[in-house]
Length: 96
Image 1: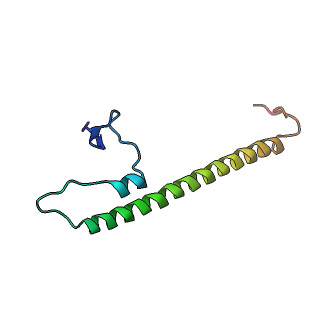
Image 2: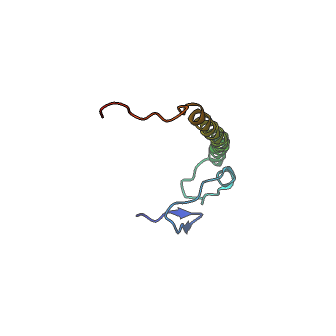
Image 3: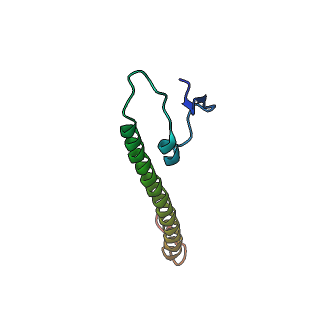
């Protein structure tokens, strides 16, 4: 497996932790001979950080909804199991 780096340090498990909007907004890059427009970089970082913020909030809301639906399903299954039981167990009176 290729070595994965986070903050210029190797990540021990091979997978970096989630990138946060703050990390994206504050990341600094080394200047190079043929550098880039810093305003464009900052604008892009802001867009990516805003997208991460929105996605993290969506994941949080969907996780809560998933938990709610799971509880509702378990409640329904419990109620259905009680209501659908035959009044008494019938034995097979046939030849089989």
